[in-house]
Amino acid sequence: MTRLTEYSSYADAQTFFSSEKLWELFEGDRQRLNIAYECVDRHAASNHTAVIVIRADGADEVISYQELSQRSAQVAHFLQARGVQPGDRVAVMLEPSLAFYASIFGIIKAGAIAVPLFTLFGPDGLRLRLQDCAPALLITISAKIDIVDTSMRPHSVLADAAFIASLDQYPTSFAANTLAEDYAIFQYTSGTTRELPEAVRHKHRSIVTLMVAALYGTGLRPGDRYMCPSSPAWGHGLWHGTLAPMALGLTIGAFAGKFDAGTLLRGLQDHQFTNISAAATHYRMMKNSGVAQRYRYALNKMSFTGEPIDSATEEFIEQTFGLRVCSMYGTTEIGVILVSYPGAQDFPVKHGSLGKAIPGAQVQVQDAHSKPCPPGVTGDLMVWRKGQWLATKDLARTDADGYFYHGGRADDVIISAGWTMSAVEIEDAILKHPDVKEAAAIGVPDALRGQAVKAFVVSSRQGDDLFVKEIQELVRAGLSQHEYPRQIEFTTELPKTPAGKVHRKKLREAHAAQTALTAAP
Picture 1 (cartoon, rainbow, N blue to C red):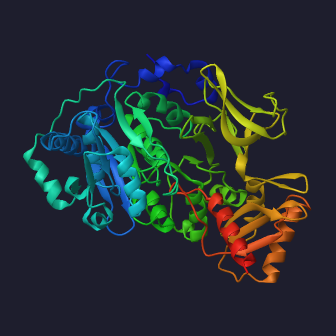
Picture 2 (cartoon, rainbow, N blue to C red; picture 1 turned 90 degrees about the horizontal axis):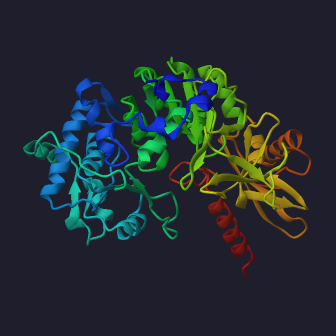
Picture 3 (cartoon, rainbow, N blue to C red; picture 1 turned 180 degrees about the vertical axis):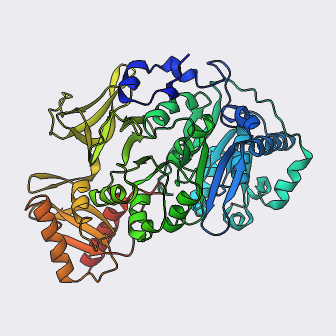
């Protein structure tokens, strides 16, 4: 029996993929399945390294599958002793560590529902999520307990050294017993505290469909040493960075603490990671760090997600790592649908492209009348699901070879004097300036044009008139005469979602507030 993990080419992916063959990657079946068993316990006998945590402050932490299997079993027994029942929610607000992974997998083993929470949430963000999921317990650290609502503190557990030591009273094995249709994880997407996103509810069987993205989006194969620096509190870091590779028994890398590109680059060298998937922001920070040339790398596959990657960063990646970085596109609601098949020698990776559809998927760019757009024409990106076309809420175009290209979020389109412009393309042009570290473009009200382009620029250089003119001329030359930013604001940082995407909505809100304040008598 040939498994999907034994194929690596694009042609084989189109020929041999089937949903039935995804199930062959697991020991569970359509009736009974447990994510923790599939990701941890069945690999415990090997004693291979499960997780390497690269720490921003302190020594790196190495955790074996055997240790994680035993500690997560002890957590499952601990939860039962605390009265946690199958189906109860248990929230975890911890940085990547033995305590984090043991807690998440212990919760799932016990048949409860794990709710990972971002460690940088403030009191309001945390309170709203806890109120929404109503957990039986919250597992966190003493440094965070002060922001926990007083009503939740009696139901909080501090995952310190004493807690880990206390687990020794419990057995080191636990027989997980869940249905494939049981819920395993509730996960919140990024959003503001005033606009709480609904938790996405994942069942145990979600691990099976996840493997499509793992095989063709991040290119995971047996033997990979795989790094994902995204926080496991979010979809990319948890599903693509943790669960999928561990289901294949791979050694994974995680990053704990305030992100530092130099520390990550050092970790890539020291631990000889061969495959990395990161946010576009991570790669830009690697470029801006100026230290990438200090290290030697073993990487042979690289992918990114979250938002398009600019051409200057793409060039940096090729020069530094000798590889073309592969896009992986999807949304929380619909999953991954466009990939660039990392590791497939017969799939040319095109600059700026989102790649092509995952095996078996139908993806189209459609016009306002739901008709397919010809190559080169921007329209709504749609995916065929359950007998209907579903909107991704993104814009895109295709080329003559069937590759897809991102055109920005539908609400990020800028229409000025009748011209439709892409914020993504404008930002890419600005980022070609050697003194620009980050850039974001939005449309702002303009009495003459309806909207004008405003750019927010992060740079260590003084934002004087000469710098403004250089940026504007660069965009004119690179795109067209009408697409340059008529307004440029220099700032020390850009607002981002917890997943690392530039938060253009906050920029629009800040501009509106600033305009209202200026106009006030």
